Image (cartoon, rainbow, N blue to C red):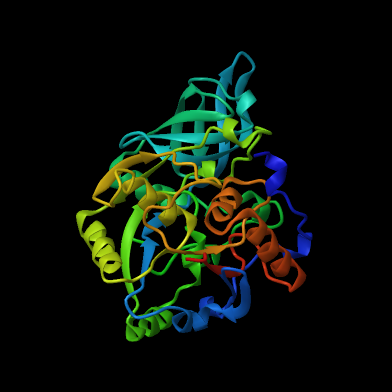
Amino acid sequence: MKLADFDFELPEERIALRPARPRSSARLLVGRGQGITDSTVADLPDWLRPGDMLVFNDTRVIPARLFGERHRESPDGPGLARVEATLIRRIDGARWEALARPAKRLREGDRLSFGALTATLESRGEAGSVTLRFDLTGPALDAAIAEAGQMPLPPYIAARRPADAQDRTDYQTVFAEREGAVAAPTASLHFDEALLGRLAARGVLNTRVTLHVGAGTFLPVTAEDVAGHKMHSEWGEVSEAAADDIRAAKAAGGRIIPVGTTAMRLIETAAAPGEIGAWSGDTDIFITPGYRFRVADGLMTNFHLPRSTLMMLVSALMGMDEIRRIYGHAIATGYRFYSYGDSSLLLPRG
């Protein structure tokens, strides 16, 4: 398969810069085999059956984008320069791996200040990554990051407007619990308490898993042959209780529908032995057409970037021709795309 097989043209005005309000008022494209229906997220209970199970990712996004100054002593006195760092992975209580800009102007030993939050650049890695050792540690560091940081909006939003206070609510799910993500599980942003209540009244089950979404989710695929792409890894966990919930729902005839590609990738990783069980660790599962799904019977997800690994995942679920048809319909009928955009419920034939 070639990267060009997953390409499409998207008018710029289709990129959503703010979410729908209320959350559940977003549009919902329901794809069932070769049928397409236009609906809304608020009507999701009508499309699901009693006994179906939604699998939510309960990760919590941290305000991981930091703006500040680099301080470096020189023969001519202290040198100052503006710097930006996006935290991407916690190493220990005081150290984070981050993507820094401008990385080429940073050296080991540089002191960085982000308001009252200070750090030393401990080492440099590849592609702009650095290791920062903060002067605080543990909960005190977490609190300082929460105070100094901005929500790490996706590049296609951040290039058009800065993050603001509203994003601290908008870019977080209502059931976010376990802190560690630097990007939101965006399909879940459509849920509010009222919708969760209606789903429960309908008899739709749910369970929670955790996958800390990393910045790698936005990395472009550069290999023209898809098989040559190296997938990024992210930490996740399926508890014994969640695995039991999923097995029981499936045994009773319910459909397992992960909400978001992160939940999808995680439960498919945990089911690699053939049946889902408790699992934790780093996953770099790469789902492309030809993949045999072990657990998921469908997927609720937003509309994804062209030429992305997520386009490959939904193509694996629905088939490449059907995904082209679904995306063509979404573009032609004005659906809003990407993280703050509308949603789809994808239910493959059989």
